[in-house]
Amino acid sequence: MFLRILAGFVLFLALVWVVLYVSGEASLRREAMQPWPYGLGSVKQAVETPPYSPSAESEKLATLVGSLDDVEVKPIEAYVAAQIAKGDDTIDPPPADVKLAGREETIAELVPFVIAHGDRLTWSSYRVADVSGLLAVAALDRAESGDARAAWDDVHAIWILARVLAPTSGWRSKQEALFAVRNAAAIARK
Image 1 (tube, rainbow, N blue to C red):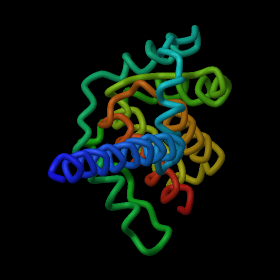
Image 2: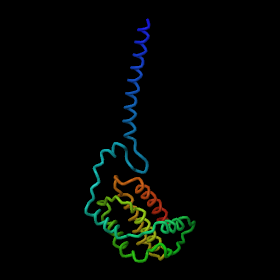
Image 3: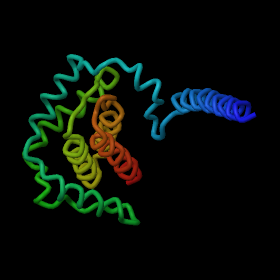
Image 4: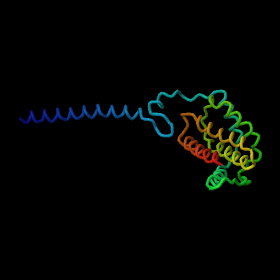
């Protein structure tokens, strides 16, 4: 009698284990197919993504971005946040600590390059905040001076750079790209 009860209990445990195993596998497959927020794809797509390999255009982009050294992000973020927070469409001129002067030539070369080669660019950089911040300041400065076309090109370049961030980029770069898109949308409103 005891052996029958023990055998029945072992059989019951084996049945429960099989049911949990099968349902767990199905649950994992289902979750692997679910997309992540913000267009990040699914786990299955992340596994199938080929390794990052920069194109010739991406290497030129890295050279242009590399020339934007010694950028202080804090004053840039403070200025852009202050302009975005305004309820009206007025734009204050950028303060001197933003240091936009001296970088106009690089920005003037970067923006048309990004717009022209956007579909062939892939970049992985920890300088997302530096570049998108400078482009945001340049867009606000140009909009304040009445050059709406150039300001829109700067905003467009921010969107492209945030979109073409390599899938292998770290979480911090992706977070900065999301902030850049949010700022670009707010600047486009102005």
